[in-house]
Amino acid sequence: MMGMHDCMNELLQNLIKLQTIEFEETTKQKAGASIAELRGKIPAQILGHYDRLVARGKKGVTAIRGENCSSCHIRVPIGAIMTLKRGEDIQLCENCGRYLFLPDTAETETPPPPAPVKRAKKARATKRELHPV
Image (cartoon, rainbow, N blue to C red):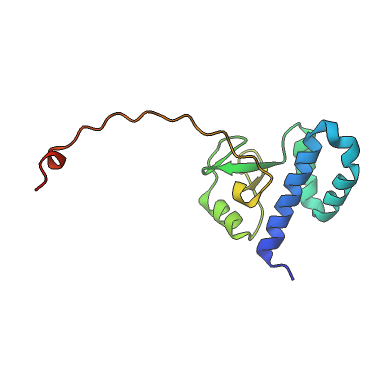
């Protein structure tokens, strides 16, 4: 018997897989069966919302990076992030309406490129450091 947490994570996994397949035009012909199978596992109301976003040329599922939606870059409320972490429910971005997921729950997500390293200014030693008491 699957717990609520597994159920929500599996639902998000299915949405992410579906999006990955649907956005890779070249594999669409071969992916027909997979798409049908994935769609069969996703509740109709969630699929309906996802399809409306895709119909407008938007991705239906997006990652949370830091505490921001990676599509519209608006801060995601911490309550929504905690709900996702606990796997209690799926969450929508309040701004752009996409389904949100935490990258650590999705093995298929490619990590973002490493941020350029900012050179730290040389910190001047304080008097306390120069003359320890």
